[in-house]
Image (cartoon, rainbow, N blue to C red; front, side, top):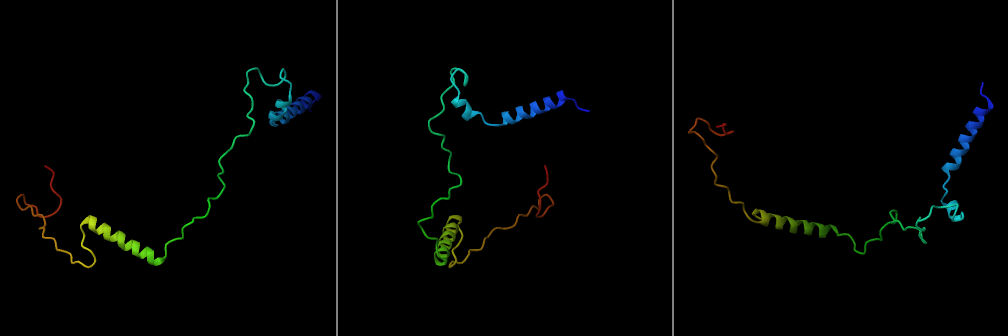
Length: 118
């Protein structure tokens, strides 16, 4: 069914693929200059490149986490500061009721709700 030339070509292709898949970098460095790299090729660095240590864990923190009492105290301080900035009364002060009247557009036949398009 298949003749010798087919098997020879298949074997040659497989051998060429196996040889090409190997890394020739170490072999090229050992070849003489006239057989190896082309003229004008830059030299390899003496030391390999240093990559960042992405899998190294950072050192433990020197400070300890806050206790429950410190967290509660800090939350109260933050809420007091927020209330002062927004003009809210504090927890010990009474809220002053607002004296605004609801809108009443009885001039054009509508009470409260969406305003009509002009």
